[in-house]
Image (tube, rainbow, N blue to C red):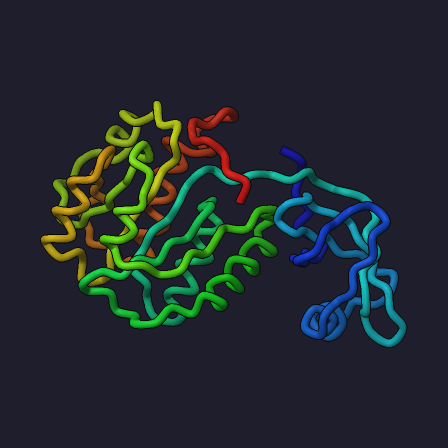
Length: 258
């Protein structure tokens, strides 16, 4: 893996990147580079768009940053593991935290699901996408997790691909060794979905529906009840360590182009 440069500012741009191209900055980007980071013409930043890798680019402009001149590619595009994180939405800052941590842990897709005891009635998808971008910029990621529209739990389960492994994190499950349980599925080749319920847990009929899914692994996250945002980090860390791209240079999870 190429060395990540964490000293240089990084910026996500929704535009094609190639050597010699010039990209006009919007007002927010110009303000961020000029007024927040205090950068001027001639200073360099690293830019990425989620598909063309990372590029060293020079700031251009007279009184303030106006555009970027793309120079050389510093890292080729990297792909994420085929890992979807499904969750009952939380409110405000805790949802922000959960989205950022799921991105840092390598989730390729974020799927809000509405359950019986879901606390948040609305999901701000634009805010979720902004958190995805911010986490990618700060953590050296080159791919962006896809953000899906919220759907009822039953509809999401009905539309899942049967060969995918469903890791159902159930606070009511018997406490057992989660590493050993996950290791039994190291032959997974069709991708993984991890689902965490709301603070109030799943309703009994929802728990029964999840347990009937093909290729489901009901998993305990230990002897303590975790808050939903904490459970996200714990579950994704376990999956990545045993089945994902933490496990070995040649991970078992099929890669995705997100």
